[in-house]
Length: 185
Image 1 (cartoon, one colour):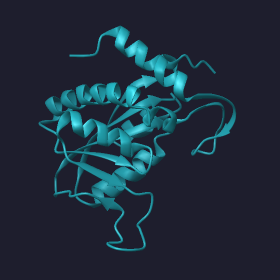
Image 2: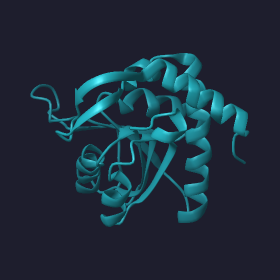
Image 3: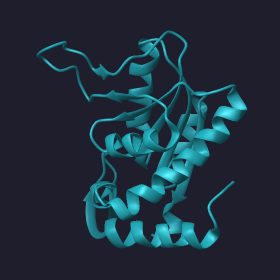
């Protein structure tokens, strides 16, 4: 079951109102953009994060039905952490957190949480441009023995993420695109 259109439209508006900035910005990919979607401005707001968790849960359930189940959810430091935490509360799936780099103290791990060989994992992303960060995190997960069955992002900027992720053989889904947020370059 998918969320009613007005709920999706209201949520898209709330995300855009909270996070859409205009100006000149350099993205992680190195590209320059006339707009920026500041993930922290929407992922730190409970009135946005709660409904997002519900949409993620719907997508995760559909993915699980297609691939024979999902064992865990994963997100990358720092932006993916609130998303995966909220989604796990809706789905009941344990989570994995992928650090940008191995920590140099304690256990010195790059992957936090418990992953078993062959665990089916859905990776949650905040804003996808080229998909580079998500694919880097997928590499960490697969090296640990996980099978990443899908990447689901909150917002697809429509700048190549889908193509790059699907070319890597991974299912890609987006809750919203930049167009849903009213962004027209």
